[in-house]
Length: 483
Image (cartoon, rainbow, N blue to C red; front, side, top):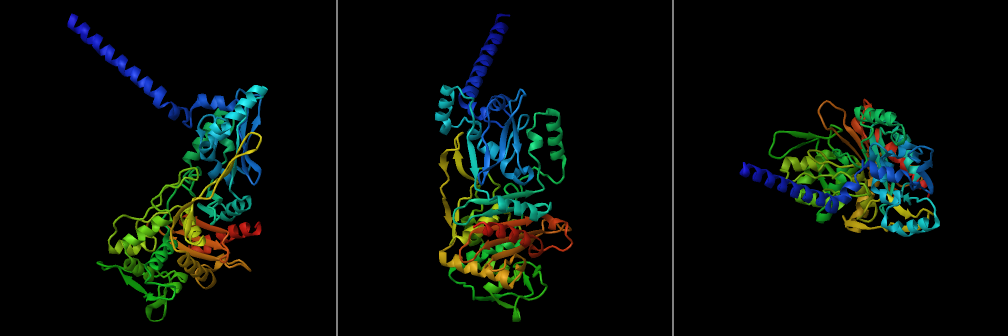
């Protein structure tokens, strides 16, 4: 009996020690993680007691807090909610926060270290505490142009200012209305959230940042950059561009979209191969350059790296250790190559910026409750993906795509526009995705934009030029009109 009592006593002591250790870990090590969880209701109650700071675009609030007489003393309200939802995210009493609302929560809620002086001044003055504001890099004209041009079709648009990395547009369609999740009506919030999750179109998915797609022929920009980097190829180098290309070590033939050779006698210059999007030429070129060089070039543009804007984007991938047939297909953006709209916009921006890829970012300024500037974003280079000379060559080759090739629908009167079309099928029997990467103006690039429309947007005839290029054109025109 005494031995059993002793064992029980020892067991209780062990459990008490384990409990004490667990509590200590939670309080000391895990406290910040728990406190910052998106659904921490105690945190939210505390935050709702103060006026949350605004999210600003071009000086106007797209998210702000309105005083109420409820237990939750402030209501979060969004202007043009669906158009900006991929960026703002939502701020909900029941489901926490996403997007900028979550990434910049310390500033918006007023708890950031940079706001400590403001908190003390508010305390001593007897004023109610207020959060700071966040000014975004977005152009309202580019954002609205992208949203309207998509016309409800499933897809995404990302536009970047090449010289700084400022994100000018980040649009995902279909979208959702964050106002339905930020109300104080718990039943209404739960229903709206459940409806969004049950929707097969996934309106809460940020397709611009969080979904990867096979980039199709837009990846030929990466392959062309890798070829130019070898020093063996120039825009005028003549390469094979036959009607079909036999994939190495197989009995399978790769066809051109035109079902014909890309030039007389099955020969074509590199510049013309890009202009007409010649699959056979770029598949051959991929194996000439080699998988290692293609992967290195892709990484130089940002592949295999998780960009933070400040939300973390999905990682774009170039396949590891592909064989020769896989390398040929990867060189034209097929096989296992995957990219976000953000990533392909970065490729365009890097080419436009003399080969230097700038860090993409959404937050331009962090402001105090009185809108005084606390911090301002400084442009930061991520990598040098190309030499300035090669970048200029590729940019001029891309101009040929729009002027004399497959990208004519991106033309803007009086403006030199560069671009690259693409289509990519994910599953047999489903329409391909339509892509376009555009840059304007060629002589002094102000914007690089990537557009992807999933499964051809329901269109019977799918091409990057027909579906995605007009969207890119609308965004580029909107940016240039305000310069």
